[in-house]
Length: 94
Image 1 (tube, rainbow, N blue to C red):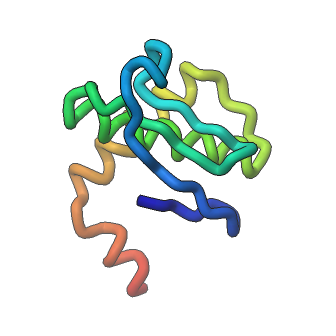
Image 2 (spheres, one colour):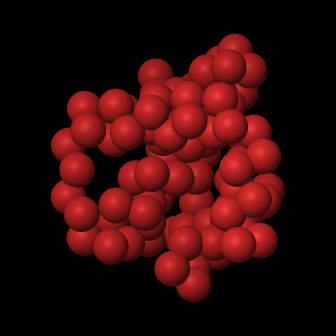
């Protein structure tokens, strides 16, 4: 899987708990990679994907969010998208 942020493509892959060193997700800006711990539950993996994407966006645009701010924003974003499943398509077609 891949995502593009500000013109840069980031690959997303699942890694072993050993490779993750106790982390659920990691974003590497220098290698354009996002790693997700494959031993996490599906719900935790989904949150981790969005969390790392938010990190990439905030870094790409110089927002400088704390880890707590990234976590809060991620949970708000995921909640919004789940509560409004068709909203992205609707807004894109305005």
